[in-house]
Image (cartoon, rainbow, N blue to C red):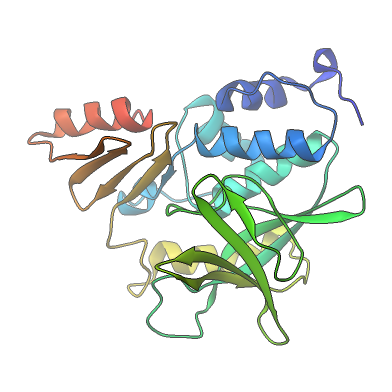
Length: 261
């Protein structure tokens, strides 16, 4: 399916401009991969609204205002909701799913607190995800059990469990480690409201006590740990801690493109 750019909704074109994608819109797997890659290198993962007590909305119009027009980021329920909307507008078949996040989880099995997307295309199914702050696939992963799928210097594969469903794994420290798992029960937008509310407000939520800001760069990635900024590149890692609020805001603008109001 080819989409004529001249016939795109203004919001769709603004979204494509936000992620810096100027290529074809033919509904192919290659374009899907480029859209995900561009998104991960343009839109930061961040929980600053949660830390600042700003209520989140998972509706498309406020997400467009926040992420596209105000050039902010968000966390999984915001980012994947909006990315799923974009893909549907471009003609892709998308199913919203709910996942259990295993990476760094002490209390296993973990609760369902992560949104992912299943995209069907030319008889194949792909896992798409732009809503994780850590290292995850920068391009879609085809839903094939046991197939090793290299992406640069990272390698991923999907395992299948009769209870937990698909399990995304990464090759790390000479072994396969779980990132998250998901079943294929379709979710409605309202199905994310309760879990997102828990993530925003529960004292047990990892999102309410820790600053989480991260973005991929063509040289590596930028993150914040506590108050420390970490800039990863092929030359190593550079760290610094802003001393004033203005220096902090400037560092957010410089390294993440985030302009706090």
